[in-house]
Image (cartoon, rainbow, N blue to C red):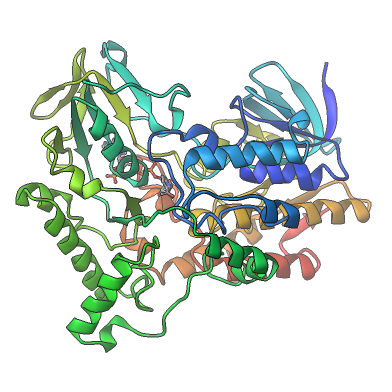
Length: 530
Ligand code: N01
């Protein structure tokens, strides 16, 4: 028998937790969570070295003053266990857990246009009828697993970094193979190398990475933030990435080579992730400016890695620095100076199959005991595409998005009324600090739902025309940044055959928020309410 509620929230990650709190004030809500615990990204990604690249004082909730005053972060850049602990604290402190069903994967959702209700089905057999669905399913939550045949034949163990076992993995004395050298792989590898008998890294595209600069939290820094939290949270929303990072006035072209080097050197040693990309005002928008910084970063790799051939294989040369998200690391390049680490270039000789004993590339077989796939995510659309979502007239979301997602403001997609997305396709997603912008988006959705109810209406949708205008905006701003020159999860080119176009809004969070607010203020322009 079906049960009823006002709102179903999918996902108990950071946005989902806040959605339970915010929407649960005045509505019956049920949150469905696939994992056994809260935290989303920070529940699943428990691989060694998992750590955020935004300062802890910023990468946290701002909705409750007492919470942000009382909580203390042990480090500048929080590690996964601390973020998971924080998510659990928030779930308990605000009594959210009673509204969450854990180990519950949503499999199907159907919109009944005659009653304006969603029917939500789960793998456990739940059937919930509700007025609205908020999909807080995460932009980076559906794992991308490598396509090679004979995975079942491999006699060792295989783990994806986003499905890491709670009890950890003992690498002692083992021959470990790691596929993938993105943000995740780069964090995990040095820790695995320190324990394993031998670590073979299979690299398809080298990444740019800079030292994370993590360190214990300084009390004065924390005190200063706590004294100014309310203002700083407001200020964050006015910044491009919803994070207080100062942007310089100066172009890289306006200084001498010596000045340039000095500035970049300072940025590299700044103990602040991303300071390198903000060392001058044109690194992210001008290819020539970017090339100078990319070469500076390549020189760093060459100066750390002792074997010149290995160093050259590690040097990215085919895309701009920052075009894919800049990685942060703790001894990644230095790790290649260890005797028990080998780099294999699988761009030159791709992996073709798993074997009983390990992995086979086009020119060799590599015997392994444990394979780690740090191969990233079917990002942005993957989590929703894996649920069968039927909107009006039986239209299925995965079919609608087969050639790439279309949305209005990243919050709705036409034909799927009363279904809202947090960090959906064509939002800033990881281009802006996700806890703060997630909170903002949940508030935006809550206001839309409350406005609908105030006006005695039961349905809100958007239109293909509104989607086209948003696609034009997303496309227009993407022409300004160097992201367009890199294949990445931003443009779906991280997975062979995936179509998507540019799926992230890179016009900056303030412009995104302004356009979202303007739509509501202009009598719900682009939305259709009934
Ligand atoms: O995933 P990725 P990720 N054969 O897609 C390789 C956030 N994050 O999990 O570059 C061989 O970046 C792939 O190679 P290529 C952050 O937003 C943040 O590392 O496609 N290799 C690449 O090397 C980040 O951007 C933090 O050629 C294959 C790797 O696997 C996002 O999550 C930490 C392959 C995947 O890299 C995703 O990062 C961690 C194949 N078939 C994550 N398929 C921090 O805040 C894939 N690869 C610090």
